[in-house]
Image (cartoon, rainbow, N blue to C red; front, side, top):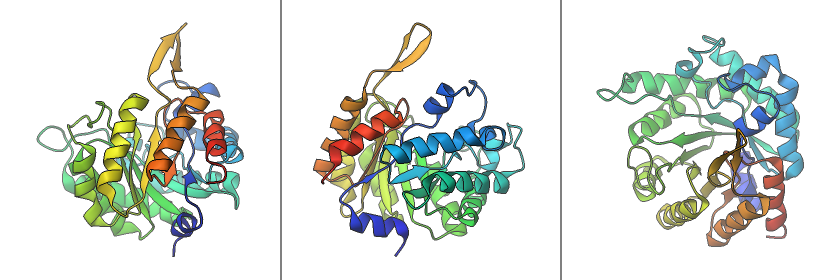
Length: 291
């Protein structure tokens, strides 16, 4: 069995980490700078964010590789360094995690649509995720997470690419940023029905919009997932601009209450996405203590 499967067998619920971008920006990352650049320019801050989540109670942390596919990196100073970037990210996450948390390799969407709506071909997409997954596996990630996907064709191609490179456990998570549907109109049930036959280690939702809408999405995923674990990492509510700063409406206790409700309904992995801090994760972990 994999370390992820072992942890699922040992615990009723796994606590994941929170936001990357939110916490990097709080530590000085400038808007427009790829977070992956900090893997080399500010590795101490990367480790600090990871360690803060582990100290808060995360059983699983995601690498700083959301945009570390060949397609996404080509627009940054790290173009052509997919292997180095992903291995570096796993190393820094492992430094922070030690033996206290699993390291999950994060793979985000390309940001492009498939032809004819956009420039992306299916073959190019498959190759893109094969390259990143190979690097994350070489680096020693415990599992891989396709996260924040909104287009089904891209998600399915990404799964194929990952499977070509690795047999690590694979989580597939969608962003229902139109409320209870993705940007491309995909419902939680449609996402589940398309991905479940591919044998994911878990299926889930991350990012999105309001917590009330996340509640609906998670409930629908739980109804569709059968015996497959459900992963839920919603935003800390809806962001607002307050005195030139982005503030998320849900405090730690609010997010923890929703996370506990998801667990009571059957979710197996919970955490936070945009706006969620180590304080949010600590509240989630404390609310689930003893389960």
